Amino acid sequence: MKSLRPLMLLPLALLSVGASPAAAQDAQARGEQGEARREAEAGNIMRSGEIEARILPMMRDAEYLGFAYDSTARAYRLKFIREGRVTYVDVDARTGRIIGRSR
Image (tube, rainbow, N blue to C red):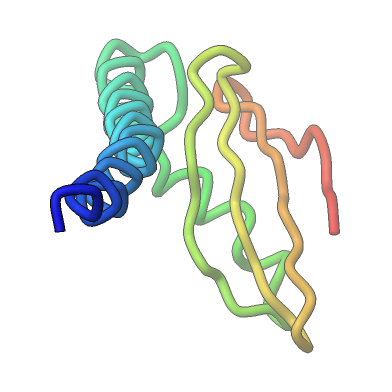
């Protein structure tokens, strides 16, 4: 029985190691969204709603899934799905201009 104890603790150790990157990613995403809010309030970038108002009408045939903000690039990435295919539209947060699309 004594030799099984380390084996029983192994799954717990693996869970704690595996959770760390996800928690760090969540914290980074919250930080990016907070940065977008601060930049928009300062007038440095457009608000997400303004970006959505420009881009969503262009993507009428696709379902909108949401956006993420990249503070380094000062760009929004909007995510859409149509017929099972995901499309990302990258938008300059300062101008609202589309700077890229990927499928």
